Image (cartoon, rainbow, N blue to C red; front, top):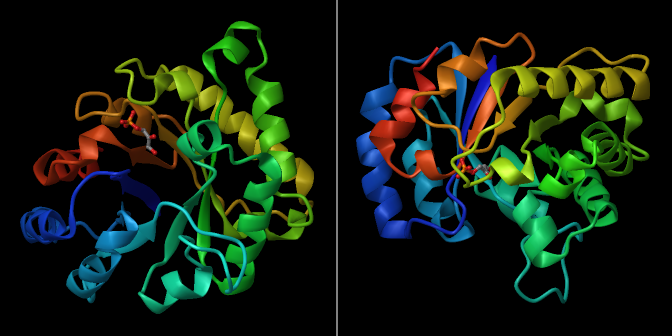
Length: 246
Ligand code: 13P
């Protein structure tokens, strides 16, 4: 099933989460043929989890730490998320990488922890503008995937991947659907190369300046298996239109 996901980033308080979900659920209640996911801030997980129980909307977190428990002030473990009914977690978002210094090795440890703990990770990959201009897009993405999945080669079916070109995030300047298609096909080729038994269960979703006008165009591409939406997911009506755009 296609995956249409919101990433609220550091927006929307717990009380605003309640208002959002009250408005959002009736708008998408008939949608059964695609997976709908809200990746909310940690502080909203509790209320969202209560409100989404028994609905067609899944709950995701935006980050996780790789240790199981202990003296890691400010961090959140896989089991804490699982206990709240979280099904997905975004790992290695470019904002984590470039603002908080998360490297490919840390991303790998987080993926190991998620798969050990039964949480489905959405691994984010994508090139910066300077890398794209230097013709390094494919090399950067292949390196990110190979390091992130090292020792996990046999588990490629248990993750989803978001292709989010860094220059397209929050810029109003999305990749073209054709560019996204080419990179998504390449990502699937890398997965096939990594795992000879790969079953093709990894969805490769696109993120970066997705809006109501372009969402349907991305979804026409054969290897675009969904969307990860930042800014345009902050309004429940707009996000419901994106969910129903194809
Ligand atoms: P925007 O949709 O705001 O460009 O953000 C994309 C993103 O980073 C989703 O994870």
